[in-house]
Length: 275
Picture 1 (cartoon, helix red, strand yellow):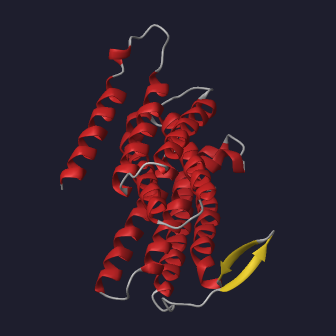
Picture 2 (picture 1 turned 60 degrees about the vertical axis):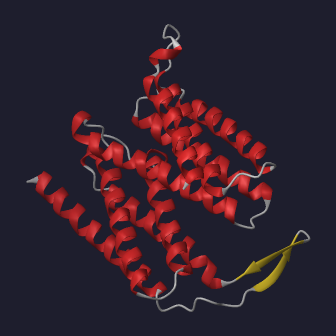
C-alpha cells in the first residue's frame, strides 16, 4: 500500500512537472525572434541584456526545482537523508538539456519544423528525468539502459556545446570556462555511473583540465567546428573511460573501450572531412 502511494505521488508530480515544461516551451513560440537588447557596462565590459535571453535559464531553473520535487518521492529517502548534494548529479543533465532546448527553440524560425524540434527535445527531456529518477538508487542490470541513455545524452550535449561555442562569438575565456565546467560534469557523470570510486571527482577534474588544454591549443589552429567538437568529446570520453577502468596491474592494450573510442573518433573526423 505504501509503495502504491509513493508511485501515485511520483506520477502526479512528474505529470505536473512535464505539463509546466510543455507550457513553458510552447510559450516560446509566441515570443518575438528579434528583440532589441540594452547595453549595460560591468567593470568596463559591455554586455547586451534582454529579458527574453533569460527565458532559457528560467525554464532550466524551473525544471531543476521541479526535478527536486519529483525526486523527493523516491523510496530511497525513507531510510536515507535527502540532501541537495546527493541530488545534484541527477539534476545537472536535465538542467542543461532544458536550457539547450530552450535556446534552440528561441532561435528557430516559427514553422512546422519548430514543432518537430519541440516534440523531439521534449521527449528527450522527459526520458532524462525518468532515467535520473531510476538512477537515484543503483539497481544493477535494471538500470543499465538508463545509464546508457544518460551517458549518451551527456556526451551528445557536450558535443553540441563545443560545436556551438566554436561557431559563436563568445569571448575566448568564457568558452574555455564553459568547456571546462561542462567537461567536469560529463566526466563525473560517467565515472559515477561506471563505479569510478572515491576519486571520481578528482579524476573527472583531471580529464576536464586535459580536454580544456587541448581546446586552448586548437583555438589557435584552424579546425572546423565539427572536427573541433569530435576531438574534444572523443578525448573526454576516452580519458573518463580509461580512468574508470584504471588498475596499476593492467596493460595498456587491456583498456579496450578507451582505445576503440579513440579510433572511432579518428574515423569520424576523417569521414566528416571527406563529406
